[in-house]
Structure formats: structure tokens, C-alpha cells
Image 1 (cartoon, rainbow, N blue to C red):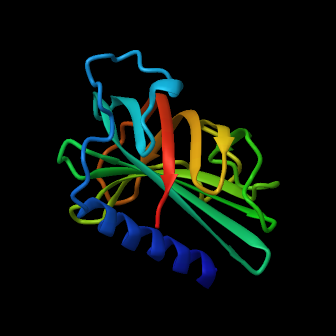
Image 2: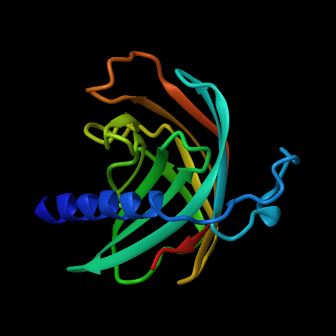
Amino acid sequence: MKNIIFYILIAAFVLCLHACSDSTSAVEDEENNDETLVDMQPGSGAYSLTGAINRDVTGFADFYYVVEDGIVFLVMYITEESGNYFDLEFTMAYKGSTLPAAGTFKVGQLSGNPEYVYGVFQSLEDESILYCTDWVGADNSSGTLVITEISHESLKGTFEFEAKPSFDNGSTETLTFTNGRFHARVWN
């Protein structure tokens, strides 16, 4: 349990560093809303939000992974580039020593291999978790994360899932992520 908390804290620290970077625009041609995965620039991600928040989001996409005691932790995040300071993060943990193969993974899954995949939508201003998949109970898959290409330098894919309000955000309305796509680069 201490290892999981340690890696979550590392992820939060990495997000803070990433949010403070002075990078250029992640998606160069924003006029084309039907951008396919092939058109995604390295280091970019996009998705649509409906529910408690309604808007299209583009941002910077990065990932990292660590191996500890036979467990791989893969973290991919999309940080909104519009200055709203929101971040979408996926975390996957599984037994092994290498990156996962391309495939479809259930978001909110808590058993099997991978042992879990969850998504978190949070505010980077105060580091509060606003919405998350149900990762503290039974297997309540709320969507999918599809990895189409993966290497030690980049991660490509799509996603769609539903997130519930966290305990501390005061909302009862869910948040639905659709048309999610990413071409994340390794964070270093």
C-alpha cells in the first residue's frame, strides 16, 4: 500500500512540474475537430466532456512507467492547455517487468492483470480530485482505454469512460469522457 501511495505522490509531483513548463501548443491545428489519432502531434491529447462540465479539451499528453518488486506502474496524463489547470490521469498497475502490449483495458477494473486501471480528473490549482472511476470497490468498469501503439518513447490510443464525483467535490453529477485520443510522449 505504501508503494502505491508513493507512486501516486510521484504522479502528483510530475503533474505539478509539467503544468509549470512553458511548452508550445500541443495540438497545432485546432480548427479540425475531427482530428484522427494519426493526426495527433506527439505529446498531445484531446477529449470531450459532458455532464457536470461540458466542453472539448485539448492538452499536453505525457506518460511514464516504473517497475518495482515485479509490479509495473504506467501513468499517462493529459494536462489541459487552455489555462483551466485541469488534468486527466490514467494509472495502470500489473504484474510484470515490461510495458503492456497494445490492447483494450477496462477503466475502473480492480482485478486480473492488469490489477487495476483507473482514471482521475483533478484540479491542478489545489490538487483536489474532482472525479474518478470507482476504484475503491467491486469491479465497476466504466469504459475503456485502448492502447493502439506503445513503445518506450510514445503511447497512442483512445478512451471513453464515465467518472463519479470524488468525496470532496460536493457534486452528485457524473462526468462522461468521449472521443478521447492521445499520442503521449515519455516524460523525462
